[in-house]
Amino acid sequence: MRIDIITVLPEMLQGFINESILARAQKKGLAEIHLHNLRDYTKDKWKRVDDYPYGGAAGMLIQCQPLESCIAALKAERDYDEIIFTAPDGETFDQPMANELSLKGNIIIICGHYKGIDYRIREHLITREVSIGDYVLTGGELAAAVMADSIVRVIPGVIGDVESALTDSFQDNLLEPPVYTRPAEYHPESAPGEVWRVPDILLSGHEAKIREWEMDQALERTKRLRPDLLEK
Image 1 (cartoon, one colour):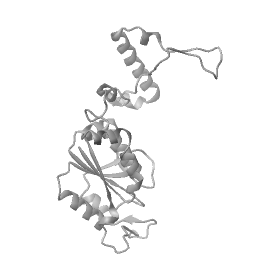
Image 2 (cartoon, helix red, strand yellow):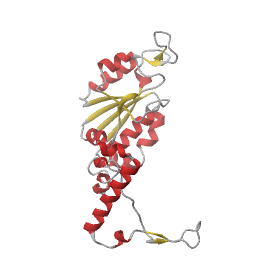
Image 3 (tube, rainbow, N blue to C red):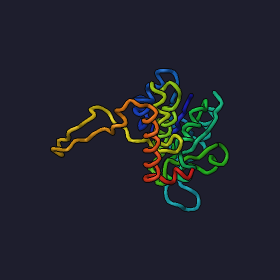
Image 4 (cartoon, helix red, strand yellow):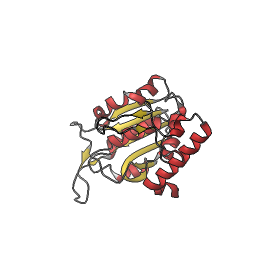
């Protein structure tokens, strides 16, 4: 899949998209992530992309022209399944949405900035508005990074162990069960005399009973920590 990110701060995202899982996905040819500096598309000689909002409200607003020109240039090269605007009043981003978007061919993510973008862009060009939480960020770059990482990591072949991605928290609206690694017994320096043990069931080798224990634990943790997920 291809993700095009429109931003006024491409440097903020450059390192992120070239490390870890996103870098691996691109090297494998399973994903492309391209950054577009919105200032490259403005007709203003000073490279301004924002102006004061009508009505006297405080703050600055990204103008129609640079955004419309950038989107038009991208759409002239290929079709897009979604044009997404990162907005605090959008639908909440979650694992099912990440799974859904990972099946798309091409998407655009627009990073909001300042007080957002001229509403006419939202009315005429945006196909989906997405929020990563009920709080306000200075810009949408962090939201775009979160979305890109979550979307790309579930593309088949990106993570070596596909089962790892499929058993993450929020798949099937459940939190992960507890997970442990070696050693089976750990003697903490901070608590002399104590022994922190891995549950015996995980050492039993009985796969069916282990899966049953994991499901029980996932349900218990979800009920205790995120009961809202069970309602879904």
